[in-house]
Length: 424
Image (cartoon, rainbow, N blue to C red; front, top):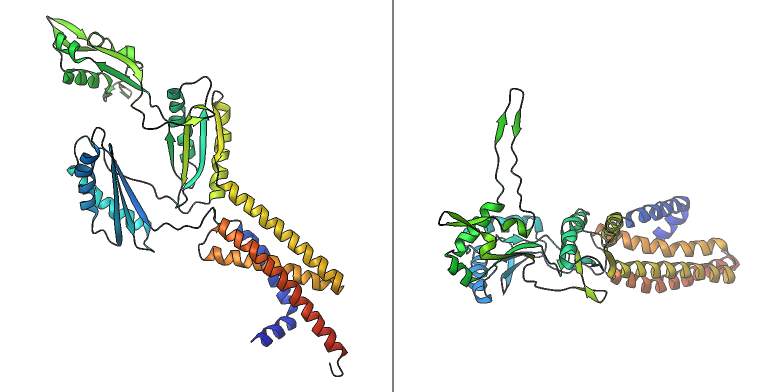
């Protein structure tokens, strides 16, 4: 077979050269669309469900939230195992599926079960949320936000309503988590003794506040020419606007909310902090989808941040705290450098010792052709070009150079001996 392959290649050498050139051109174009990642995808197909239950202790979350969700999801098709975790105010249930399971089909089956369990949870628990599909190395970027002028609460407002929606619109981004956030709230701080002295209950405070901030439909007004919608615009913009809300009527006079409670602007009890540039700030953690290209997603996120910068003059944004794409870029640069040095050494050695430029060119083309062919096979097998693969290619480059030099030199020696033979 080897004899036939060599003989055919020599007989159709122009065709072989043309096919090699086409392979190189097509390979470069295909590799440019291949997924690049830090490590290969090693996590099994999984679906995670998180349920918030504010105010419940760890044991109550386990009994009232986690166990009912586990019971409802047991027996889902292709389910391999179930893992759960209950902490203060939060339940997490992770379903691991058999290898090769279509993750989208698995999510659909899980959602069907979740829709039935919602009514069994306590009233304080939020609806169960199925997290977006994440890559095993999901974190593609950590972005630090700090400011010398704005408070942490003001930075949170900008991050939540300006930066996060723009980053979530980037293709391949699954989630943008905000650490150290301080969500703005209008808080009503009640004193039980003060309520008792005025004869007001907590329920009346809650009811009057809900009625004040609830926005309902205003209906419409018909005119001879058109129908005009009536909008209900709330006047509650800050804490002081709630102070004149009547809570109850005593002796025919209204008892205002400001008379029985302290109104202020604040934030809920924090569950974490972020220290950026030796001061309080926010940390945005960007996670990608399993099929996302780390290099491409990172570049698009940085482009989105650059587009937002002119409108964020009071913020300092640092997107280089954690950037896995840097490892990939350095690995690619090392591979290109090793490839270039290898080709130059092969050409120099063969041209110097064999004095034949065609032989040197054949050997030099063998190196990129072999590497591109390996990368194309990975691409067709839905593999990723990661740092481990790139390290392997760099090591294999040594064997390629060795084979290119020794094999070609041996062929040239055999040809010289053949020409000097009595009957070539």
